[in-house]
Length: 252
Image (cartoon, rainbow, N blue to C red; front, side):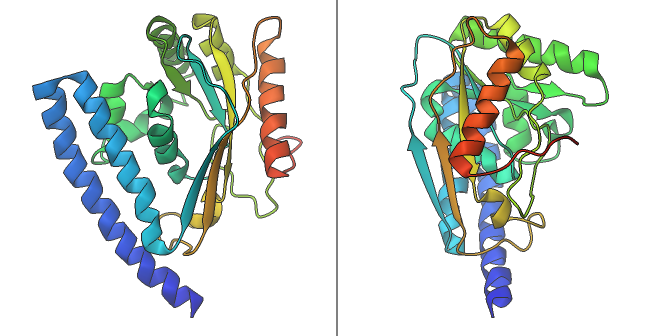
């Protein structure tokens, strides 16, 4: 019976999801070319609100908790754990005041209505994981951007999604955060603990798991001054693991 509910509600949500992407893709193009970058940003914010709150169609819920006093006069590097493609939309919506800009795979810059257009226009670091030199250049460019604009970057240091049934986290990789800090030396590093999104879509987009409980918890920031990037990243992962009650895999 539960599988039937999952399949039925997944169809409802995915029809809604596709409609949201198409409508907001058109809205983004119009807002960017007619009204400018700020109007485009607001359109993206509302697209991600629609994606996030649409999960109620599956009987699921989202909760956002902010334990940090986030500054607006300096750049921020948000460092979340990564379970699902659905990790992203609530970060964009609930942290919209800080204009989060993502480090993303270059493959996502084409072919996905709404999402790909935003990645190309937002200043996202579009990295080719087969070309480390290109990835470093892109991440460095994003670091310089947030240093100059006092905006924020979002990087998933696990590198890929983790859906361990035991709740384990992959070790965080330091390189991307280190590159951002090098170009944005005044940035505050802020961990985000994400819970439940891997359970929501354990097998991809279909079927989704109805009545899931998902949450995003912004944890206290970590001052990089006087710490090595390795130490900063380690502290961020330990903070997330403690919040989630997870273990960290010894290696991959």
